[in-house]
Image (cartoon, rainbow, N blue to C red):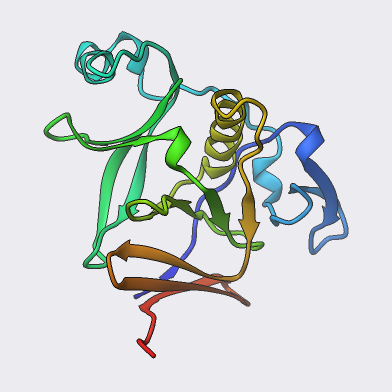
Length: 206
Protein backbone atom coordinates (compact mmCIF):
# COMPACT_ATOMS: atom_id res chain seq x y z
CA UNK A 1 0.00 0.00 0.00
CA UNK A 2 1.36 3.41 -0.97
CA UNK A 3 -0.17 6.76 -0.11
CA UNK A 4 0.64 10.44 -0.56
CA UNK A 5 0.28 12.34 2.73
CA UNK A 6 -1.83 15.48 2.89
CA UNK A 7 -3.16 17.73 5.65
CA UNK A 8 -1.45 19.77 8.35
CA UNK A 9 -0.37 19.34 11.94
CA UNK A 10 -1.40 21.66 14.77
CA UNK A 11 0.77 23.94 16.84
CA UNK A 12 2.40 22.44 19.91
CA UNK A 13 3.83 24.07 23.02
CA UNK A 14 7.24 25.70 22.74
CA UNK A 15 9.06 23.44 25.20
CA UNK A 16 8.81 20.50 22.82
CA UNK A 17 9.60 22.45 19.65
CA UNK A 18 12.84 23.53 18.00
CA UNK A 19 13.44 25.69 14.94
CA UNK A 20 14.19 24.54 11.40
CA UNK A 21 13.84 26.31 8.05
CA UNK A 22 11.49 25.77 5.13
CA UNK A 23 12.39 25.93 1.44
CA UNK A 24 12.20 29.73 1.51
CA UNK A 25 14.63 29.94 4.41
CA UNK A 26 11.94 30.95 6.90
CA UNK A 27 12.07 29.54 10.41
CA UNK A 28 9.77 26.67 11.32
CA UNK A 29 9.48 24.73 14.53
CA UNK A 30 10.17 21.00 14.70
CA UNK A 31 8.12 18.89 17.06
CA UNK A 32 10.53 17.72 19.79
CA UNK A 33 13.36 18.80 17.52
CA UNK A 34 12.71 15.85 15.19
CA UNK A 35 9.40 16.13 13.33
CA UNK A 36 9.29 18.38 10.27
CA UNK A 37 6.23 20.62 10.04
CA UNK A 38 4.38 22.66 7.45
CA UNK A 39 4.24 26.44 7.62
CA UNK A 40 0.42 26.32 7.65
CA UNK A 41 0.43 24.32 10.90
CA UNK A 42 2.15 26.83 13.14
CA UNK A 43 -0.74 29.01 14.31
CA UNK A 44 -3.55 26.52 14.81
CA UNK A 45 -5.00 26.37 18.34
CA UNK A 46 -5.31 23.21 20.42
CA UNK A 47 -9.03 22.60 20.96
CA UNK A 48 -9.09 19.05 22.35
CA UNK A 49 -12.73 18.16 21.72
CA UNK A 50 -13.50 18.56 18.01
CA UNK A 51 -16.67 16.46 18.13
CA UNK A 52 -18.66 18.02 20.94
CA UNK A 53 -18.06 14.73 22.75
CA UNK A 54 -18.47 16.25 26.20
CA UNK A 55 -22.14 16.86 25.44
CA UNK A 56 -22.73 13.67 23.43
CA UNK A 57 -24.80 11.28 25.54
CA UNK A 58 -23.79 8.16 23.59
CA UNK A 59 -20.06 8.88 23.95
CA UNK A 60 -20.49 9.78 27.60
CA UNK A 61 -22.30 6.48 28.20
CA UNK A 62 -19.39 4.54 26.66
CA UNK A 63 -16.76 6.07 28.90
CA UNK A 64 -18.97 6.12 31.99
CA UNK A 65 -19.20 2.31 31.83
CA UNK A 66 -15.51 2.26 32.73
CA UNK A 67 -15.87 4.87 35.49
CA UNK A 68 -14.35 7.59 33.33
CA UNK A 69 -15.70 11.13 33.15
CA UNK A 70 -13.21 13.44 31.44
CA UNK A 71 -12.69 13.72 27.66
CA UNK A 72 -9.31 15.25 26.87
CA UNK A 73 -9.33 14.76 23.11
CA UNK A 74 -11.97 13.72 20.57
CA UNK A 75 -11.81 13.72 16.78
CA UNK A 76 -12.36 11.55 13.73
CA UNK A 77 -9.14 9.91 12.51
CA UNK A 78 -8.32 7.30 9.88
CA UNK A 79 -7.19 3.83 10.98
CA UNK A 80 -5.48 1.28 8.77
CA UNK A 81 -6.95 -2.12 9.59
CA UNK A 82 -5.41 -5.59 9.36
CA UNK A 83 -6.28 -5.85 5.67
CA UNK A 84 -4.65 -2.46 4.92
CA UNK A 85 -8.06 -0.86 4.44
CA UNK A 86 -8.61 2.69 5.66
CA UNK A 87 -11.45 3.23 8.14
CA UNK A 88 -12.79 6.35 9.81
CA UNK A 89 -12.87 6.08 13.59
CA UNK A 90 -13.52 8.36 16.52
CA UNK A 91 -10.41 8.59 18.69
CA UNK A 92 -11.36 9.51 22.26
CA UNK A 93 -8.79 10.16 24.98
CA UNK A 94 -10.03 10.13 28.58
CA UNK A 95 -8.25 10.39 31.92
CA UNK A 96 -7.53 6.64 31.87
CA UNK A 97 -7.95 5.27 28.35
CA UNK A 98 -7.83 5.65 24.60
CA UNK A 99 -10.99 4.58 22.72
CA UNK A 100 -11.52 3.50 19.12
CA UNK A 101 -15.20 4.12 18.36
CA UNK A 102 -17.10 3.35 15.15
CA UNK A 103 -18.76 6.66 14.16
CA UNK A 104 -21.60 4.85 12.37
CA UNK A 105 -22.68 2.39 15.05
CA UNK A 106 -21.36 4.55 17.91
CA UNK A 107 -19.94 1.43 19.52
CA UNK A 108 -16.50 1.09 21.08
CA UNK A 109 -14.34 -1.23 18.98
CA UNK A 110 -11.47 -1.15 21.46
CA UNK A 111 -10.41 0.43 24.74
CA UNK A 112 -6.68 0.78 25.50
CA UNK A 113 -5.60 1.61 29.02
CA UNK A 114 -2.96 4.34 29.08
CA UNK A 115 -0.88 2.12 31.36
CA UNK A 116 -0.62 -0.41 28.50
CA UNK A 117 0.83 1.97 25.93
CA UNK A 118 4.61 1.72 25.54
CA UNK A 119 5.33 4.48 23.01
CA UNK A 120 4.15 6.55 20.07
CA UNK A 121 5.98 6.24 16.75
CA UNK A 122 6.10 8.73 13.89
CA UNK A 123 8.42 9.76 11.09
CA UNK A 124 10.57 12.86 10.99
CA UNK A 125 8.90 14.07 7.78
CA UNK A 126 5.77 16.08 6.95
CA UNK A 127 3.19 13.30 7.05
CA UNK A 128 0.17 12.53 9.21
CA UNK A 129 0.83 8.93 10.26
CA UNK A 130 1.49 7.75 13.81
CA UNK A 131 1.56 4.43 15.64
CA UNK A 132 0.22 3.70 19.11
CA UNK A 133 2.26 0.78 20.43
CA UNK A 134 0.59 -1.70 22.82
CA UNK A 135 3.02 -4.62 23.46
CA UNK A 136 0.53 -6.75 25.43
CA UNK A 137 -1.97 -6.74 22.52
CA UNK A 138 -1.46 -5.17 19.08
CA UNK A 139 -0.64 -1.74 17.72
CA UNK A 140 -2.64 0.87 15.81
CA UNK A 141 -1.60 2.82 12.73
CA UNK A 142 -3.56 6.08 12.55
CA UNK A 143 -3.65 9.04 10.17
CA UNK A 144 -4.60 12.47 11.48
CA UNK A 145 -3.69 16.08 10.77
CA UNK A 146 -3.97 16.60 14.55
CA UNK A 147 -1.37 13.98 15.47
CA UNK A 148 0.83 16.52 17.29
CA UNK A 149 -2.04 17.55 19.54
CA UNK A 150 -2.98 13.89 20.10
CA UNK A 151 0.61 13.12 21.04
CA UNK A 152 0.83 16.07 23.45
CA UNK A 153 -2.44 15.27 25.20
CA UNK A 154 -1.60 11.58 25.42
CA UNK A 155 1.90 12.30 26.72
CA UNK A 156 0.64 14.69 29.37
CA UNK A 157 -2.02 12.30 30.68
CA UNK A 158 0.30 9.30 30.50
CA UNK A 159 2.78 11.13 32.70
CA UNK A 160 0.02 11.76 35.20
CA UNK A 161 -1.27 8.17 35.40
CA UNK A 162 2.28 6.75 35.41
CA UNK A 163 3.38 8.97 38.32
CA UNK A 164 5.80 11.12 36.34
CA UNK A 165 7.03 8.58 33.80
CA UNK A 166 7.32 10.12 30.33
CA UNK A 167 5.77 8.43 27.30
CA UNK A 168 8.53 7.76 24.74
CA UNK A 169 8.11 9.23 21.26
CA UNK A 170 10.14 7.45 18.58
CA UNK A 171 11.01 9.23 15.32
CA UNK A 172 12.00 6.91 12.46
CA UNK A 173 11.38 7.11 8.73
CA UNK A 174 11.12 3.32 8.68
CA UNK A 175 9.19 1.80 11.57
CA UNK A 176 7.41 -1.40 12.48
CA UNK A 177 4.10 -2.10 14.16
CA UNK A 178 2.36 -5.29 15.27
CA UNK A 179 -0.92 -6.02 13.50
CA UNK A 180 -1.68 -9.16 15.51
CA UNK A 181 0.14 -12.21 16.81
CA UNK A 182 2.84 -13.16 14.30
CA UNK A 183 2.15 -10.32 11.84
CA UNK A 184 4.39 -7.24 11.80
CA UNK A 185 4.08 -4.45 9.24
CA UNK A 186 6.66 -1.96 8.09
CA UNK A 187 5.86 1.68 7.32
CA UNK A 188 8.44 3.48 5.19
CA UNK A 189 8.41 7.23 4.56
CA UNK A 190 10.35 8.79 1.70
CA UNK A 191 10.72 12.44 0.79
CA UNK A 192 9.84 13.08 -2.86
CA UNK A 193 9.49 16.25 -4.97
CA UNK A 194 5.71 16.03 -4.58
CA UNK A 195 5.69 15.50 -0.81
CA UNK A 196 6.08 12.45 1.39
CA UNK A 197 5.54 8.98 -0.07
CA UNK A 198 4.34 6.34 2.41
CA UNK A 199 4.61 2.59 1.88
CA UNK A 200 3.07 -0.05 4.17
CA UNK A 201 3.97 -3.72 3.75
CA UNK A 202 4.28 -6.94 5.77
CA UNK A 203 7.69 -7.71 7.19
CA UNK A 204 9.19 -10.84 5.65
CA UNK A 205 9.48 -13.76 8.03
CA UNK A 206 13.07 -14.94 8.67
